[in-house]
View 1 (spheres, rainbow, N blue to C red):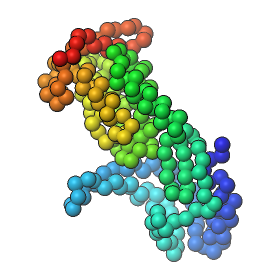
View 2 (view 1 turned 90 degrees about the vertical axis):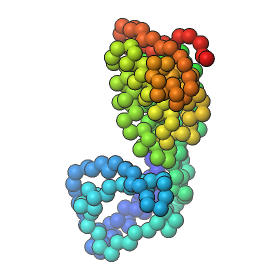
View 3 (view 1 turned 30 degrees about the vertical axis):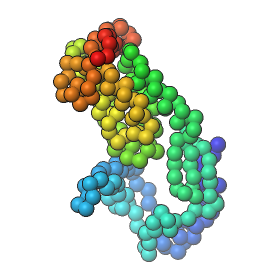
Length: 232
């Protein structure tokens, strides 16, 4: 399957060449930059505003008579609606979303994790990898998913009681954050609430659960979390 905009590349190349000849654009070859989004609070509303720092990009662009256009004003012809890299790309509406197969896979992983009685480091890493992938096309997903994988990985190192507390703190934090709420919050949060550590008083008060957890070292298979007891 060709990538998005592949059918429009000849037209775009012709337009760019014409703009270069007219002096509208100037060629530039510089280092690759990465611009991470961050949130800025609004004065009139409670929800923050997503901002992308483009200072690095603007420092390397020279364009005369440039006019900014909004999403509603922009048009790309011919339009494309195709699946690529596990996502659906719609250039007519300028939207990207998960393919149906990947959406089902993510939901299946979440459901299995929410009802699982045993977690290994590998299972949790795979789950976080899938959720981070889905966060790429989830509103505010990248902001909510930042650092979740590293925090979860760090929970598997330490004494048993510390592991339980840190694991469930991260587990609940991921569920209640804005990251992938539409995909996983209902069932996943329920599973988290039933498995919260009884030794963590703040977390127990927040989710109203009481389950005991123990940690079993499983050699080369990694640390394993197992809950025992019954719900109250």
